[in-house]
Amino acid sequence: MQLYKLLSYLLDYPAEDLYEHLPELRVRAAEAASDVRDTAALEAFLDFVSGIDALELQRHYVETFDLKAQHSLHLTHHLLGDDKNRGPALIDLGEYYKAWGMKTIDGELPDYLPLMFEFAATLEEMEGRMFLSQFGKVLTVLAGNLEKSDNPWAPLVRIGERRALLMQAAA
Image 1 (spheres, rainbow, N blue to C red):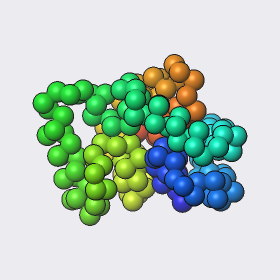
Image 2 (cartoon, rainbow, N blue to C red):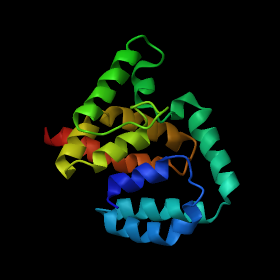
Image 3 (tube, rainbow, N blue to C red):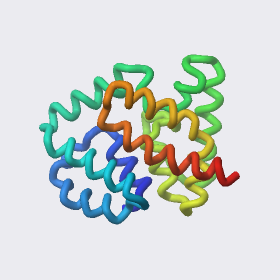
Image 4 (spheres, rainbow, N blue to C red):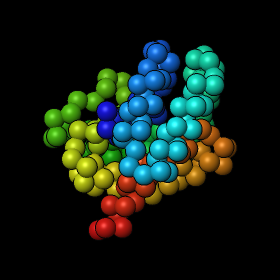
């Protein structure tokens, strides 16, 4: 499981079997992390998950991402809000996925960050970074918003942000 796939899984709604997979996730996190910051962030998040029961984790997830607009995992929301241009941006992103042969999840918008990380995981590393670089500034805003509330998911967003911004710096 590469890093983007791991981020996709950890930023998605907590799966019923998450706790069964914690030992494997720790191994995968150690393998996928590219530097000590990534390793520390992933280990801290998995420690957080280990220290909270499943129902509480799911409640915390919903309160964080579904009830607070500034924490939305739908990235075009941070760019466009409810502006009429958001619809075309979502359509374009969905078409981009289709052009690469990826099917979106039924009922999920294409700007959903876990889905975007899932897509990046299908690409070569540099292609994934180039894709994410389009959303680097939004990831910065989202991570900052999460950090203001000392949210345990913030470091995961920062990992993706660093990859996106590294690509922007190289361009």
